Length: 307
Image (cartoon, rainbow, N blue to C red):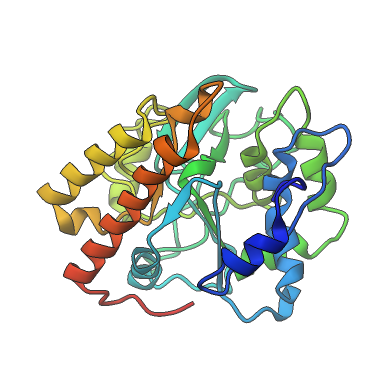
């Protein structure tokens, strides 16, 4: 959280489900988005490091709403092993150059090697030519940088977190080098750490379907997504407009809607110079949460177990 927030009140009154809040101070010479990039390792250390008792870490912006039963269904149906290095997110943006020639949303990481025979889902292993620092992609089959879209969220397995934290001199310097005033996106650092270690985004579609989608890279013909599937990249709709679309989608196909693991709740409003949080954001946010709760109550939570 920003240092100017009332953390004591948040921890006292804003934690009905045992949430905890902490302050991350400013880092001199870096934009505030450095907090987003450092969150995984800060949280990893705070929760016991390698001795943590959880399996998956869900990362998002302040306007990311997670549908936890849908997250658990996604993980369990694919039999993903949290001990393996997984980075999950099918709302990616792929850039050929820094902030230029970017395409989003992208659902499938085309750089991934095929899974071993008989294995349906596996960590995304990258060719060696795709793991060089910076924009050195001369020997990579795909000349691009793949990053998650923060509002849609990202999931790290415990296996990936252990890998990122294994060398204390690896991730923190990387984040500080990546998130700078001329390149402010904290999302980029989240994926860069995994990439330099040889990993990309785990494919969440069956192998044949993922291969068909990836053929169209960089502008893929996406058949379905799970992370904020009803949201666009830097979507121009207001929260209220977006909620209306979500309600319509849920009414037309509730089963498909329940496969969405996340929603980007606040979109166009964040780009305006002034907005009223109480009138323009919170009503739509509450409506979204009520919609998710109602659908999960009607559809049950079969397959939604784990941590």
